[in-house]
Length: 232
Image 1: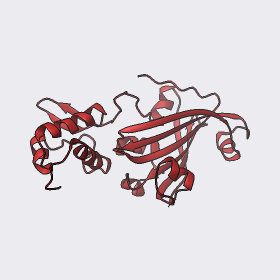
Image 2 (image 1 turned 60 degrees about the horizontal axis):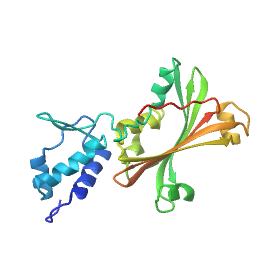
Image 3 (image 1 turned 180 degrees about the vertical axis):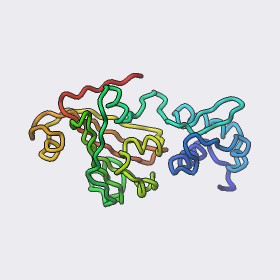
Image 4 (image 1 turned 30 degrees about the vertical axis):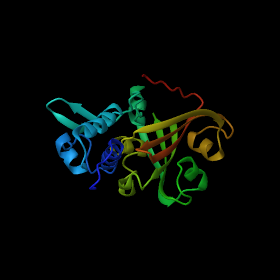
């Protein structure tokens, strides 16, 4: 990439970019340390440090004599796994249904850009959808996807697969922020969740990044009866 010796951070960020943009697909064997050291003009120890960081973050899987592969289901070092809403509902013994409400490429409003530290009027994919359990609304998902970080989202078929499930398989993350709160349902949320406007709702917001670049902001709204359970 350059005639200058690369730092482990430069190597780590470039490898993260290749994984996020699916140059290397989940499960793919990546070049060995010697090949990467030659490509980046760095010592093998520097390459090893970059690979170890990505492995600790759950983005790579390293096995002696088997090489290094892109993780099939990347997770953070803390092992907080991004839940697939389909699995969450089916684990309750319920039938899962999915309904796409809208999917548009548009300029994100200033409040969204500010949350993601992006320039105003950044072009993003905006997906709105509803997840149901036994035909009863379970979660309303309002999601913004940064097309600069995940360009493949531009051509994703969100009518066939929800953005939550698609991103888990296509956009490994290196950092995440989770926020949980109680609020009163807006008119739109109440209509979709089949509750009354102003009824209490449980809201989860999630932002993920890859090597400092924002991937997505998800606003997830549930009826007040929702319970969140996680295992670390």
